[in-house]
Image (cartoon, rainbow, N blue to C red; front, side, top):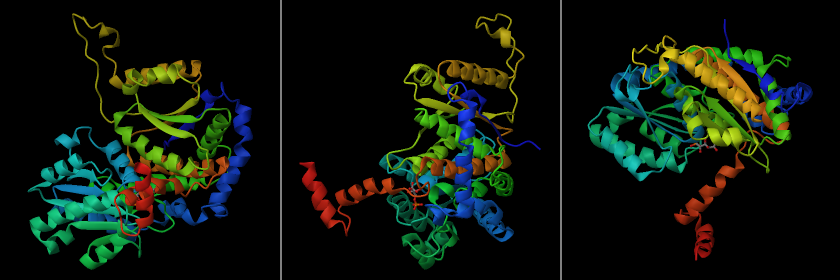
Length: 446
Ligand code: PA5
């Protein structure tokens, strides 16, 4: 059977194979810290064996909750931000028909997302769209106190209750949160919502293979068992300290590049369905590594679209970047370029070829140009955009992130920097308990 794979040989023009290999012992030490749970952040390693720990009972429970929402709703709004949003969004977008929002090949209710911004227009327009529709809500917050999802949930809950009454509304709301703590847990208990638990040891950005990601993905009509199978397969493979372990090789290569002055990594896709996979990856690596004044800056581009906007910078700008390409080997559908008698557009030289063949040549041509231009290239091949391979990819990036973070010398599992803006926002909004901060920040505003 095919699996995802990694090719790092096109970094060797910048850092030598020997330099990458020399970091393998460090990478193996990072993996050992994860497996033995003996380093900083070891209380946040619940994700490491999540695929094998997710048993039949939990899987069936998630599927049953998804079935109930699918049967009773035309629209389901998943409310969450950061790690409580990006994983599900990434998987759903990767697997969905590009035009499902317009009704093409819809696999179930329309899936919408809220609580991932505080845009007033967005919320107003969402509420207007939901008017008169049979909608349900999945509200996801590990802490249960995050402002953005809390605002969206307050609005949507009130709307749903006004439309169908409190008791019926409660049947269409599922809450995913901490087992005991937080405002959302308390509310869910009081209102009698169906709930799922986010374990203490599973941080937001590592939670896509928990109910946080699995429930919205199942509601959207996708096979969470296949997703977990793929992740399980990688869990078995990538916890082994072998030379072939692609997580160890990826972590070694990116750290060798970083130490050589390559401070930015661009995750590149050649399939627009992977746009949100890039967004998920940015949170995973950005929050895990960007601390203590260190860390590779994670960026993402969608090619060939962005070759016409960011291509100039990547080819020719400051030589501080490297790229990791996500390459899908087999598209799901077929489109052949037709021949045209007049050939006014000059495209007959590619008539009869599949569009994907052109796309692959765009990818290859770009790689050669970038490597020539001083942009080292790694390539991850994904046999197809299917649940199993996405499960493999997710687990691969998660474990490689933990290894890489330890190689960098940071705790990959905390995120102290995320609190700074919240403190200021609460002070500016005069949140009770922030009186001193309110006074201090107001005095700085002049
Ligand atoms: O720092 C983080 O982990 C955040 O980005 C969270 O993912 C995000 O704030 C959501 O948190 P919560 O699930 O607690 O609402």
